[in-house]
Image 1: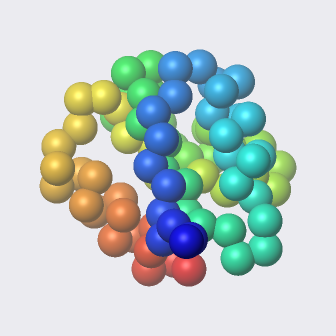
Image 2 (image 1 turned 90 degrees about the vertical axis):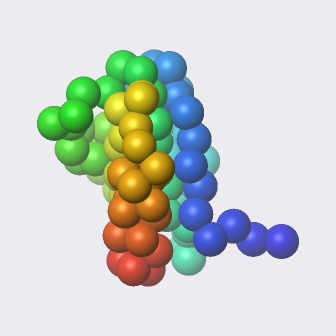
Length: 78
């Protein structure tokens, strides 16, 4: 079974980097990170380093509409 996308809650930037690195493979699935530490104006590039590709970051709390928009965007980028 393969995932279409991964949505994960992280509590530290280090945890986000470890998770992102573990998901990097050819044909990898989009990675969306959520955290109470993220700000609304934080870009995915702030969490990504080098070849690590985080498709979206969502600050907690986030709305259902925000999550669905992030998923649509991430899945459309594949």
